[in-house]
Image (cartoon, rainbow, N blue to C red; front, side):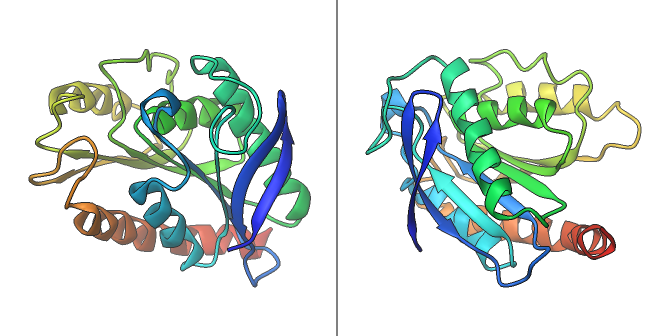
Length: 221
């Protein structure tokens, strides 16, 4: 799990990167929860998400947003963090010039940032949004959502009511050609305390369902 440093808008950004063995392998970028509430790239959900993609042959990067860990800069209420995520994808693409596909996975605040990045980067063909804070941030920019993906939520989430995410998913499901999946982890709170294993089973099953399509696109490119 090599440590990497790459350049962001406000200086150095610290990450962990695992290159794939296959030349045309897809890229995955993993985004952590809110920096002002203890979110880092070493969050247990983020760490486990990272390995869901590594173990399926992705070139995978997780990193600390500005002001977290050894990443330079200061919290910027989402705008700067979106620039950090774009810089992370740029860096991953620069060392994987043959990659033809990309996925974004984000947890809580990271899910909000990830969905914004998705709207700006047409090469992103899949996403995983975990505990998307649909009641705390504006997701109306997803009009329409350009890629199929998965929303996962705990049914005991006291931070983001399950109904808020369900309402968002229902809006996104009306788009032609896009398939939005929604899964629930019973008994899980916003942080998936004691339910990370169940969460990863849901994520892994979804990736395995989607990956044949990813592989076809990658090999055909």
